[in-house]
Amino acid sequence: MWPWGHAAVGYLLCSLWIRSRYGRVPTAGLVLPLAVGTQFPDLIDKPLSWTFGVLPSGRAGAHSLLVAVPLLALLWWRFNTPAARRAWAGFAIGYLVHLATDGIYAFLDGEFAELSYLLWPALALPAYEESTGILAHFLAADITPNLFAEVVLFAAATLLWAFDGAPGLRAVGRWCKRRAEGTAAALSSR
Image: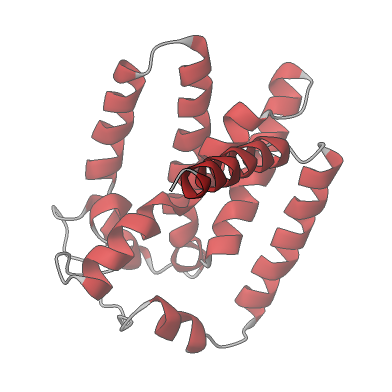
């Protein structure tokens, strides 16, 4: 699945969960870690495989439940305040959604051996056509019904996010403003 597909499924599931469980919309403290979690396995594995050659595939390492479960358990133990646990929940939902959605097409096609990445290195990785880099990966993309479906899903998630009040947007704006002010202050003091 493409990055926007992971983000879309993550936000849709998170929003539906918060609405059904708590009767409200998600907050920035949940949505921002969710966004990171939906991309996390690719942010780790793709560079370690495609750029540095450390991992055998762009879907190894952080794509394995043998890494994800201990990592999430460690984070749960380490971040034990209510706010930190909300952030953990967002990250964990995003991370696990990523792992599941990477295998959704193989699952729907009954190609269960393609899901072996979930237990790497205990199971051998399925054969993938590996990319030579992120840009090459995007440029080699074919417009398929699956890609189109992910774009539609992303549009639906974006509409729901906007309807929910765009949680996280103001927090990111404030962070960017502080960074810009800090940079301007550092430059003016030279």
